[in-house]
Amino acid sequence: MGLLAVSISRRMGLKDRLCENIRTSGLLHDFGKLWISSEILSKPGRLNYIEFEMIKEHSKLGYEVLKEVEFDFPIAPTT
Image (cartoon, rainbow, N blue to C red; front, top):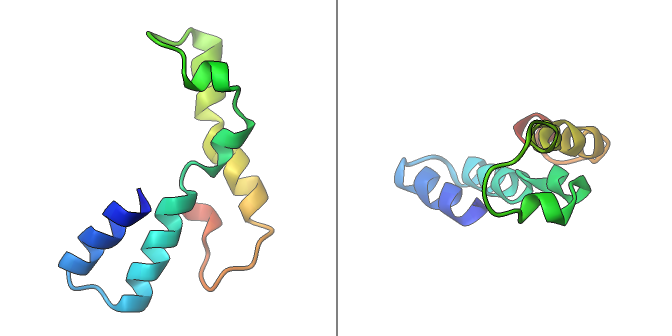
């Protein structure tokens, strides 16, 4: 996702620094999925209600970890 995001941002004419921030955000976008069971992430077909609720939590999980890491820009809100 990071490479696609940076390609789009460059085509839009955004400054290099902003493009790099977008690339980093794209790479870390699904960071919170590390705490979701691989069985749920790779499950074929529809997720049940509980599984879907767990998937929806991945952004909060990523935020909670990344908010403690210092970046050149506020990365946690973008994950």
